[in-house]
Amino acid sequence: MSGTVVALPAAAVLLLAALAALAGMVGLALAMDEHAPARPAWLARLLAQPAGRTGLRVLAGLALALSFVLCLQVDRGSMALLVWLMLMTVGVVSVAWTLAWVQARRPPSR
Image: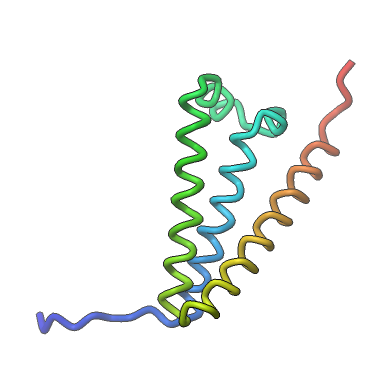
């Protein structure tokens, strides 16, 4: 054991940052009452209490913070902030389109 550290390539770190940003946006969206119909049954049971929704919001915020930290690992501060904002924008649009698609596929309620 020589104690060497193997660094991930920048592309891999940015991919992890994008996944963390997407996870954060999914968590924030599913914690909102407006998106309750899109929740899976197990998540609906978990989020029935306010503490569950608060916990999901905290986890989503931590995922977004992790995404920013990963961006900082690849670029200097100003560029990392720009990349992070773009990743969050892509995450928000992806979640919005996915939730709209899920809602459109649901049979109409009577």
